[in-house]
Image 1 (tube, helix red, strand yellow):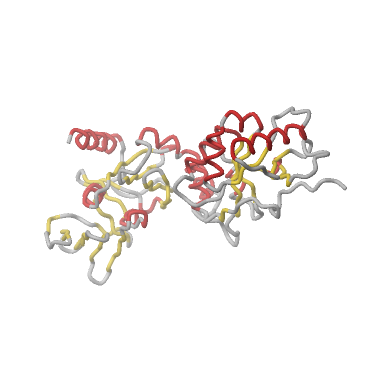
Image 2 (cartoon, rainbow, N blue to C red):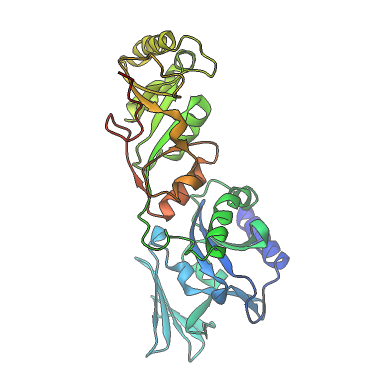
Length: 345
């Protein structure tokens, strides 16, 4: 009970701290967050607003397949239905009331503005067992956040993690592009996720723990020997484990050999996959070597129509969100992947 009261106080404080327009919309975009993701970007024409102390939001924010809720507006009957597997709310716009699946009716406004039905945020969220927060994100953009208890970050920690994806979408919008999808005839990007070193491999593996997305992790010989459990876990999860060497390594061939010896010792197998710079690859034979200079950040990969090796860093969670939003196709690194350095004859 104490936790629920505390959460309610936080939400009330957030609502009070944000000034919403009573009519008209000045901002070009606002964002909808679901747990720790940011799946929707909506135009300012359907910006949330406050009326008589109640925050109203467009019904589309509840049309989130993540929690099995669908929203349907019936123009002829002037009703809006929010429906989950076991619950239902039917708003009668004419009568100003809402009826649930048990036939219980109460007064509640659902307001039609410019062909969009706006529903009371707190009433709808609470009815379907969700928590709702109204936040101010990067550069003062409004973020409506819905959570179902499976979120990792609280609002204070979630907001800073949205800045990169918000900036990307805003840049795309201001550049005349649809924020959430590749523009024009551009194909969705094809990406090969890669992580280098213990820190970034750990982050990437944690982010991908509940999804089926291929990942390739590259370690030096010392990293393998010092982190045997991590390496074994990566192999057990089906991730490709490859070798790399430290910057400034003078004997790359010996470093790779030591890496394979270490891999056999801790994981019971060797690998022919390595990722090196062009300079490091000189004179190296017997390995399938990927060009480390071709590894790019997510924001670059999203703008390319060619296949890309994408670097997983400490922003990996948001990077995966951004790539998912643009329908990226994730592929595992293979010998035939277009990043291989072909040794000179």
